[in-house]
Amino acid sequence: MHRALAQAGVASRRAAELLVAEGRVTVNGEVAHVGQVVQSTDRLEVDGSPVNPEPIYTYMLNKPMGMVSTAYDPEGRPTVLDPMPDDVRLYPVGRLDIDTTGLLLITNDGDLAHQLMHPSSKVPKTYEAMVAGRVSAAGVRQLREGIELEDGMTQPAVVEILDRQAPGCTWLSIEITEGRNRQVRRMCDVIEHPVRKLARTRYGGLGLGKLRRGEFRSLASTEITKLEQIAGVTR
Ligand code: URA
Image (cartoon, rainbow, N blue to C red; front, side, top):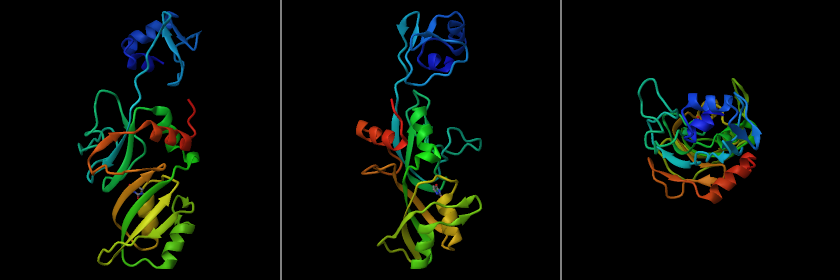
């Protein structure tokens, strides 16, 4: 609540707290109380005047190698927020490893991000992986059916061998609906074809299109609607 008011530019966080304590703030027409949790869809008013919520921004970044997917890195490495506009507080929707490239959503829409990352949403994510060695049909079947990892069996995956040459390696397309830490790398390690290169090409039905490595763009409203449907966000 205080954060919502402060973010909307009403006052500092401290002053916002005072406004609430003085009973001058309403949420959906009811007097707010200190510590009340509000959603981005709630209607806030101060002294009867509506508070305009912070505008929502959702971007797609084609992440290059070498960037960490956190807002701040104690080791001082480049982060995925470095290329992004800095007028609002943004954060990445999930993570890509430092050496994974490709599609990463970055937003200040907490509800959408939370729902997309929730395991029950089962958002499909497609990766192109260049793995060491020649992958047999049996290897592909294992990846498809599920791999025993130390944190449990993986859900069925959609896996195809891509028609792309790389000496001593195989290119795979792997679609998973979970988002466990280093999941694709760990799955490929188990079948003894370690990942040499990894890129995410699709997320929740959205693709990179012509977006080049290192570039970002705002999502179109049709793309946001698609994500909201997949994540089950209702506004
Ligand atoms: N799986 C991985 O192993 N790494 C990523 O960055 C994403 C999925």
